[in-house]
Image (cartoon, rainbow, N blue to C red; front, side):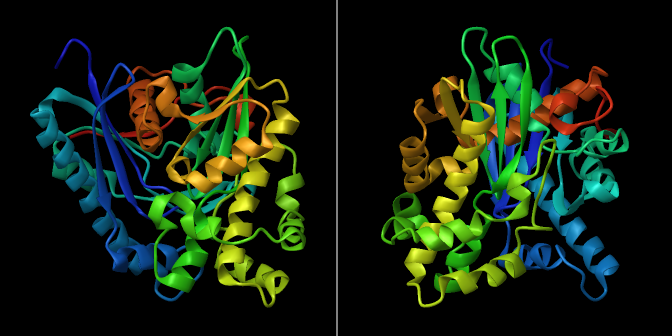
Length: 364
């Protein structure tokens, strides 16, 4: 084992696009890999978000297929780095969230960590959210603790906005106080609409180009902003259990007669407004906002964020980490925290009764 341990972080998020992986050392991404979901698996993972026939069998089959893709991502990282499995201390694997109901005391991320350990020959740490929920927390978001560890400043208040399928913010203050929560939808409604209208998985062609070609509809945006979740106090977290296809279908009544591009523009503005309203309310002293996740690659969304905030908006590359690598790197960090038996949650964010070591070990 190297004197400075190597860790692998694997993350597949609510955008359902695929698996991001990083090989890290000392919280630096040495190599990165991405494995896209086949269309059939993507469709099955989306179907498993809600009640359906033969769920237990279908979930088990999807879990094993997903785990094999996780293993393929690991093998790609090892090959790119020219190292063996024995040189990696552990894999931190998030799995794919198919239900998130902390108010009922559970969250479910599907992955077969025993199979992943078998396929890779590396210790696997998984199940990071369960202990926080057992301690009365939301189990999400978990990334603010990592954001503080690598992006925190002793001289300025910073906000890290993670825009995946769902958006969340981490407010990092110079005194070490950290707050954060899921603000609402990130890319998932935009992605769902463009897939239904144009067969694309996201708004391609320059980052939000289709949305930028439309017009934001103020009355429709106001209707979306009336969603009760947005007014709930923190701690709070959300996912496809709320912001799903039925939610969008229900709200399309507010877009009667609208051009499809105008709907896309308004959904993008909805994501922007939920984020900027949260930042203005809970971090009015923010001196900089750094965006990570797939939303950082949406030029139109980034422009809306900057127009609505007084402080500079950039992506986390300005702090040394590519925006698409941040979440995977966070799960490598959480694996390292587990191996050192150090807490991985922030009670100020999740509402848990106290700091907890997160995850469970599946030895190679």
